[in-house]
Each structure stands twice: as C-alpha cells, then as structure tokens.
Length: 155
Image (cartoon, rainbow, N blue to C red):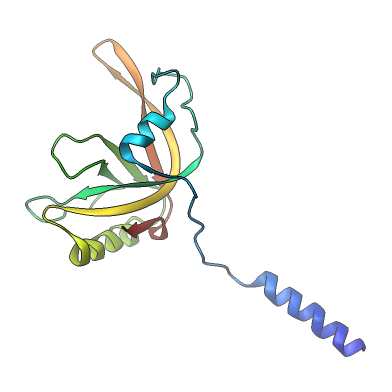
C-alpha cells in the first residue's frame, strides 16, 4: 500500500512537471477590419485613451502580401491586410519573441499556400494601441503583438 501511494505521488509530480508546448488559441476570431471596429471607443480611436479590448488575446484572419521582389521578411514587424486588394485596411504585427522562427514559418506558408501575391493566415496575439499623431490630429492605432511562431497558422 505504501509503494502504491509513492507511485501515485510520483505520477502526479511527473504529470505536472511535464512541459506543455501546446499553444492556446483565443476563441475570438476577427478579420483585420473587424479588429479595428472591435477596438473603437464610441466610434473613434482617440489618442491617450485605451482601446476597447486593449490587452485581450484574439486571432486575426488576414493576408500577408508577398513583395514582387520576393518575400522580404526582416525586422520585428510585418503588415497584415484585411483583403488581398491594394488599399485594404491593415494592421502592423510586432514579434516579441524569436523573429527568425516566425518568418521561417511564414516563408513555409508562402511556399505551400500562396495565391498570387498573398498568403492567407491566422495570427493570434495581444491587442495593443499606439498613438499616431498626424497633421495636428491624433488617433490611436490598433496593433497586434505575438511572441512565437506558434501564433501563426495557415488559413
């Protein structure tokens, strides 16, 4: 009986000490355009005021645009579009973690799933706002932050 109790305790300890690498995707899925509307405060995005839902985790569905010169994935940000048409609403995604692994994953999706100059993706991250002053006016921009390549999936 004593050995059985020890075995039970060891099993529980092993279970809770195992590394769980599963990424939990947020339940809420929005297009880039819906993300902007979801974050508006009284129909506006005024500076210095927190966005509605700022700090929440969401999944955004949109398009990564492939440059005509190839896909240049550098830095720690990329632009994510609502639709594959030129001029569609977009947001910037900032990578807080390993940028190389994120861009490698996007590159793989481009090779496997691109349609013309775009690849449709699902990106899960945290909503953040930044003040964007322009021509004497100011509005709060809606951005997304991600921390790993597991935040990106093909659609």
